Length: 136
Image 1 (tube, rainbow, N blue to C red):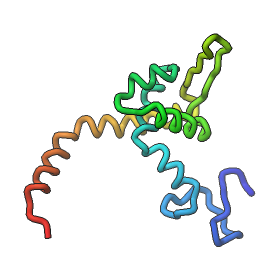
Image 2 (image 1 turned 90 degrees about the vertical axis):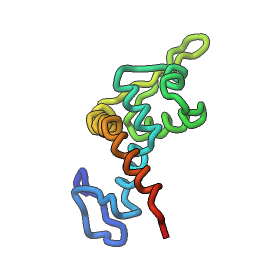
Image 3 (image 1 turned 60 degrees about the horizontal axis):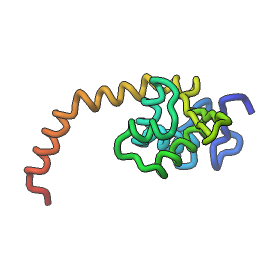
Image 4 (image 1 turned 45 degrees about the vertical axis):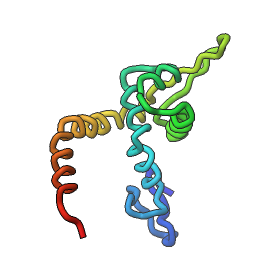
């Protein structure tokens, strides 16, 4: 199989140059789910500023539980977006950093956050207008 292609489920002879995010079985769907997750997005944005230890990440990202942070970091590491470095100290020191692949995603994520932060007033106004209407 040519690099960058995959066999389409149900069509073993059909190959695609890109994934199809609208196909439930396509791996791009799982990747989109990961990078669209709020915790993943926030972790990647924070790590864009530089490597951090686990507790520093937990304190920087308000509201994330230790369990959710750990699970999300493992998933991001598995996807190649985050690296994990262990220093043989007492106690062991673990640092997380953005990989080059993760860094290539950073601009898109930052654009989404910028949009959300600058359009929140309009969204709140739309929500209030919607909530004030009668709904069947």
